Length: 227
Length: 227
DNA sequence: CGCTTTTTGTGATTCCATTCACATCAATTC
DNA sequence: GAATTGATGTGAATGGAATCACAAAAAGCG
Ligand SMILES: NC(=O)c1ccc[n+]([C@@H]2O[C@H](COP(=O)([O-])OP(=O)(O)OC[C@H]3O[C@@H](n4cnc5c(N)ncnc54)[C@H](O)[C@@H]3O)[C@@H](O)[C@H]2O)c1
Ligand SMILES: NC(=O)c1ccc[n+]([C@@H]2O[C@H](COP(=O)([O-])OP(=O)(O)OC[C@H]3O[C@@H](n4cnc5c(N)ncnc54)[C@H](O)[C@@H]3O)[C@@H](O)[C@H]2O)c1
Image (tube, rainbow over all chains, first blue to last red; front, side, top):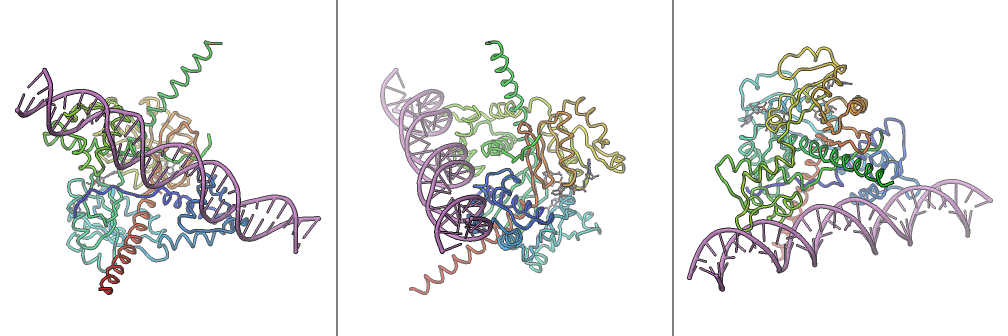
């Protein structure tokens, strides 16, 4: 039960999600076929990339005919196990947990938050939306709904102990919002989402960009001066 | 004002954030010096990686003596512009926006959400925490606080129009929670955070892992049968 | 049916991030 | 103060992901 776990989610997988979102939109618009370059320009990648990604996930189209949107979406559903329901538990019904529990897009993708848990008895009284249970019922619910994946939205300080408990009860994958590196055995998938870092990254690049723009202007100025 | 924007945040930068979080923890514990391999084992990377990353950001230590934690943290603060305040606006005070507006870690890192905005007059009446303004005051606030970065937590359907407005008023970087690809000019930094995808990735890898484990067991069985 | 056009699928190539290997430097020991 | 030890810092090697280039397949057309 140890070893730091970096989240290792492939870029190609993230792109596949992009393609799928795009395909769903096109389908709604009544489109039936796409070419790799259509998807490419919609998602901001190259058409080679699209085809290479499809190739990696064994998705194939019709030479010359492009791809059939329905077939493509079906294939993706199978790949992503969206044909079966995926039951999820959410731990920590604070600010973030509450927002996540109300997010309807999860359900629309067959990801059902079947129950939420909180240590705070006051939170357990909430009666709108998804039920909030005490931590003592964790095992019962995980077993009943064959839950394999959890969302963790508890404070930093409790994150590790909660994770240990989750794994003891059979959880195999966790989306972790607490800004700590969890120690788990390597067969457990951890995906760390650190919103502070995401924001700070943007600030960093914005400052850098402004500096670069500044330099560009300087260069222009210099060029002007030469002629 | 067009061109799809993928978020391009370097892994090395993300690791630097990891190191920093780790250093802050160590400092609290009263530690004053670290070696690259200390940081490495704490963050689950190799010590080469740590040194290479530091080298990329021009952070340098003492040969043989390792790194001085205070010096390191100061250097990082400078790199990340944490010595100055960074003013942020948050658009969309729905479920997610509300949670984010209450998140105290932003402030602790000198990232101040100076104001939030919502189109809904009802939301504008909220009087706890950060003020919620109507969109008509966007320009005024952005100018007054020299805001360069925004958090976007509005519905998918409004995301693009709000982004256009933000950029018109001088915003240069956006953390976008709406699951759409925003079209912006290439000098604007976009960081897309798609929580559905993050969750779905975990589900995908968990299923895959279970399959792999299954195979491993099969192999064991097979080996047992041979002898 | 064979020729042309169009798009896929993938080996070959390039590019970039990580890892390796070691020269360099600072501290410590004798 | 020379020798030794233990760390950094960085070019070189490696590996993996993105791009390129083109052969193969399907559709259309005379
Ligand atoms: N609020 C945000 O927008 C935000 C943004 C990014 C990251 N985060 C991170 O997400 C986590 C939750 O943030 P939050 O703002 O919702 O905090 P919060 O304090 O509002 O909520 C935490 C909840 O977890 C519960 N809890 C505490 N210990 C528990 C335990 N051992 N078992 C079960 N439940 C427990 C608490 O009762 C509380 O309801 C934190 O780690 C925070 O750093 C929050
Ligand atoms: N709730 C979540 O946990 C969650 C998780 C992941 C992603 N998201 C995404 O974040 C966004 C917000 O989600 P939410 O659950 O908070 O939705 P929500 O409907 O609760 O909140 C959206 C808010 O934006 C405001 N708004 C709408 N149009 C606007 C405009 N043109 N200008 C300013 N404000 C406007 C609305 O009045 C509302 O208060 C969505 O795109 C959603 O897909 C939400």
